[in-house]
Amino acid sequence: MNRWNVMKRILPLLAGMALLLSACGRSDLSALDPQGPIAQRQYDLMKISISIMTLVVVVVFAICIYVLIKFRRRKGDKTIPKQVEGNHKLEIIWTVVPLILLLILGVPTIQSVFGMAKDYSKDKDAIQVKVTSHLYWWEFEYPQLGVTTAQELVVPTGKKISFELVSADVKHSFWIPSIGGKMDTNPGMSNRMYLEFPKEGVYRGKCAELCGPSHALMDFKAKSVSPASFDKWVAAMKAPAVMPADAHIAETFRSKCLACHAVGDQGTNGAPNLTGIGGRQTVAGILYNSDVVKDPQSEDKTVEENLKTWITNPQKVKPGNQMPSAADNQLTQDEIDGIAKYLAGYKLDY
Image 1 (tube, rainbow, N blue to C red):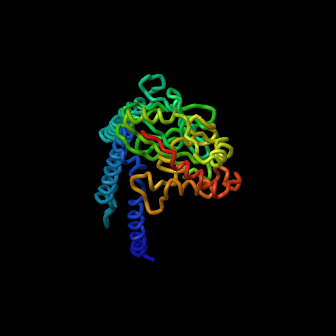
Image 2: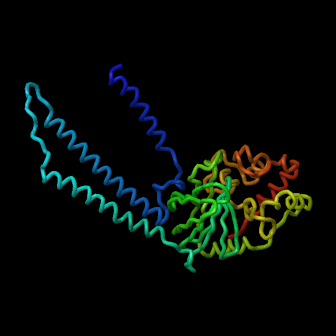
Image 3: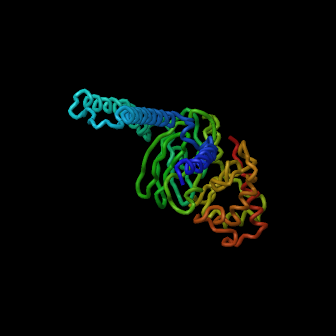
């Protein structure tokens, strides 16, 4: 098969792949659509790096093509082209030019890296958040405020958010692509980073470290709100728990759920805190709630429906997680429905 026939077959495939990949990704999950100053500085570094690399590639290829054409062996020509070995002018050029390019790239890179590594853990104006990663969920503790939540990080705009990052089990990596770069969470040691959220919005977070069968499903949301709304959220989180009105459902919820979970001042934080879960964007980080998100998709379901799906068989949704199924918990369908209805209605006003 000649080369042209091969190219005729490969080109449509490449064009199709390019078209397909161009539709991949989400606006709230892209490092190429920065929504915060940290992400913007990282994006600017990428642009400088890619521009310099592109310039080098173009110049080198242009020189190669020029040399191939200019000095190609012609029919009957047996002379040897003039050699450039020992040419001081050329040696100075190809030594100085890379140094200049390294300086252009290195200076802003060093400035940005040290600037983004500042420690705000002692800054009284910064919001301190301890992030603990679990298989396969995220815990967010606000030690200054006495609040713990899960799966949905809530922060105020206009503040520096200082993160302490740890892991409860294996190595994970905390990453909100449109807000800032990732950093690992390790068992037995802490890492620190800070981020800023200048605009109100909801941003998607991911685990960026291969951590197990549900690594790709270990999502969370970062929700930035106004400082006044943030204060209301903190107050609502610290308010006494609102328990189910139905006595049987309340007792079932206490005995079967609060042994691991917490709502308000009830329960423990061995599993995701459920306070205000009815107003969150997702259930389990990946089941989008059509009655909460602004742009529900056709496959999205309501909070109550997603809760029933999750409570009934969590392994089907997120394999490898530690949530027991309804059968393991010996929950009847009426109890599943009652608990899902109660949690779906548990919303915070902020």
